[in-house]
Image 1: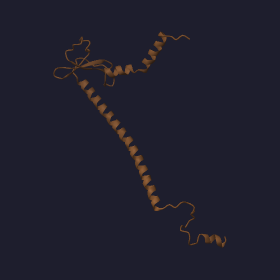
Image 2: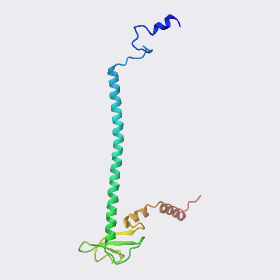
Image 3: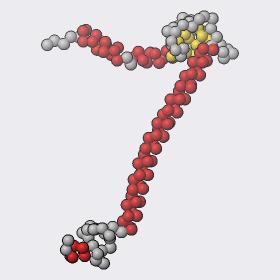
Image 4: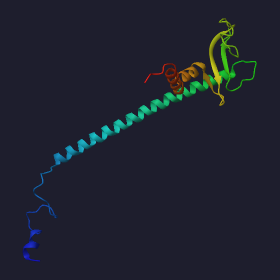
Length: 165
């Protein structure tokens, strides 16, 4: 090792104990503060966006919980309604209210009463095997939205109107 090589690191004009390129741009305290501020802002925006997504999910879960509680309360009221028969899953029952606002379950629909039931009609429900109740309107909606029913209707219309080739 020659004298010139060892003297390079011992000169007084170097401000760093390790080799630094003097060709890189200067990076001062103001630049460092600006970089930290930008990083803080970007991190805060990212955290805020993630927390907003979580808040929306919490709101959806709360809405689902309220719906479940309402359905459970309705199901409990239906099970407590007065009836003179044994309820069986899969059967549709009709809920009425008498003049004292007491719920009454019946096997007879408003149509069976020829439109003049003795009590105020509230709704029709099917008892499910898990002892929950499904409103008849919901059952009809599910049947109307059944994809197989749509496919069958399309196939039937093609049989009725065959295209000539």
